[in-house]
Length: 212
Image (cartoon, helix red, strand yellow):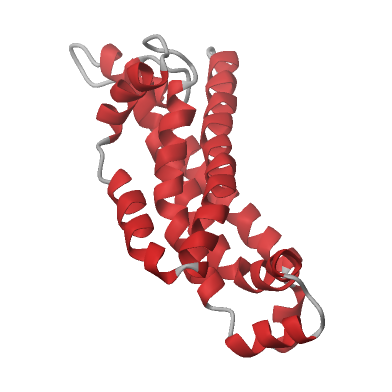
């Protein structure tokens, strides 16, 4: 309670750093996933290259991003950029597989009704693929909540700073309050984001409830 203002600031920064990369990552992944679905020869290289991005250790990526993008060390932009790369790595395959889940009969029916390629994508394919894409969004968002905390160890303001402060104060004996608070808030934040995505998917796909 003595540090409530700092804790709330860390929480807000954590929310921002967790959500922004997912939104930007989804915007980037939608055309990449569409290309991988539309041109089957492009699926293996696109999925392989984006998948390999997720194998880069987070600490290494936070260090590599500034020189690659012309940023200064500890620039606030380096964390969103790094996490956007991870989000793209997770979401491209999900978008491509979600679009692939739309049956050929549905596509032919939409074309027979006069839907052009773009209108068919926006009005038919993406809505039907929404549950699959939402599942990937849940994984990417929860993963980002965890990865953002790692950025606290390099001096970025977020809930990860509580872990760093707890470690610094653990001399000569362990001091757990900041660490426990950070864990609890991260878990609650991940659960909140997951619930929002599930609820949003239900609202965007009312026909699924009718079908059941």
